[in-house]
Length: 574
Ligand code: 6R9
Image (tube, rainbow, N blue to C red; front, side, top):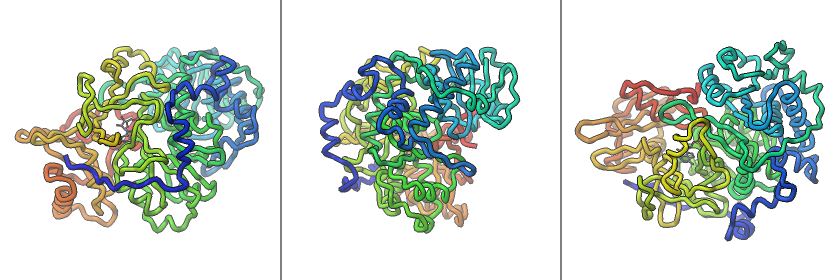
């Protein structure tokens, strides 16, 4: 397989405090990160206490924890105010239901300050919170609440119709965040009760291994699975937010992810708040102008987003960027899908910043393989295992493979943020492990410097005429073609070659979907990557199927191609 461009982008002076990093990372053990938490001395565990109250009761009392902005609202909450609002939310939940420690509480609403009060309030009450994307339709909501036997849900009047309460006998209460909500046996007016509630609350103390967040995620087959995280994940979230996000006291941090996705909780809430940082939350839909304006208005310094978003910004053109002052940006990161070298190049050009790729999964609960400020970046590589994490490429029997061999990306089990169970599905949980290795389902290789190179989901890897081709490398090359804005590549069964490579591409405005263009694209990949990696078939599409977190859904492309059922589409964007 042809290799990626390996133009190394060196560490930039001022990007990162290398000395600090090396001091803490040397001989690092996760237990070292425990000392900062109150529970280290009190023995009383609750992640929401550590994220909010610990700072509210310190010199950070009047520091802004959260800026919130959407088309109608623009607000700021200090750590002290967050403490009061989350206490009120915990009181509202407690007074109006039988919710208690370990019960499942779902949160199904667009981003707003209330979402964050409710989520953290639910944690203070000891419940396990399950955040859901607002885009979910009734079937997707039903599956998740039914599987986890949820006792309560928090939603908005607009989404209420999608909560099939009559089919969910365990669902006791629906808290509705709106104006003048009509209350019934089941329905509680959240805002009204918030106004009346006391801002004092006795936090429910838990065990380190008690549940915190339940994220449902879709596999390639079957129903969505409930990945359960525990309180102890905070140890990794605190430490990686410091190393990887490079958070410092004076930073303004913006994570663009919705809490319905693990990035939106682990690094949209916990990572920054456990560090007492200031976060920006932008509600509403993506608009290029709004995003750049937010960076300028709030002086964002650390920005965590995803390749799809970066590509959308790229697509909007560079001229626009000159209209905004983005000079505060200091550290930029990406997660969720392969970060194409093309995007890294763009970041250097337009922001004069390196974009740091990070690899992890819902199941891992925290960063695993990353580029941090103190290391040279190889564009196209996800980076190296973070301190405290042992990553390797293993074969299907769990044998570690030498550098530059393609295989299963695996992690030695036992890191703090690792999922502790799949709800109701022990068998599924067990299937992730081969001996001591957690096997991710991604294929990759590691080079001689310890950098990991993503190749695809294991089931996406293409075998064509005996050559293994990672769809990501082909997609990356396709994206370098001036006509292409999005690309998805699959293996299509072929009697002669086993599989052939088929590419689905969306074009930039102004390009015509002609046969000449197809041939030009084919030649482009052939010359730029390898002859056997050039797609034999190319199909033009207006846009490609993607998840809400921006992943191209190759299995949907494949299902279309082969006329098969598409399976669970609940995580698909619009
Ligand atoms: C955090 C998150 C996990 C899957 C993972 C992989 C893909 C994530 C990536 C990446 C290439 C990266 N993925 N980060 N692929 N480069 N930097 O995304 O969790 O939604 O569970 O997805 O996403 O395939 O296995 P989740």
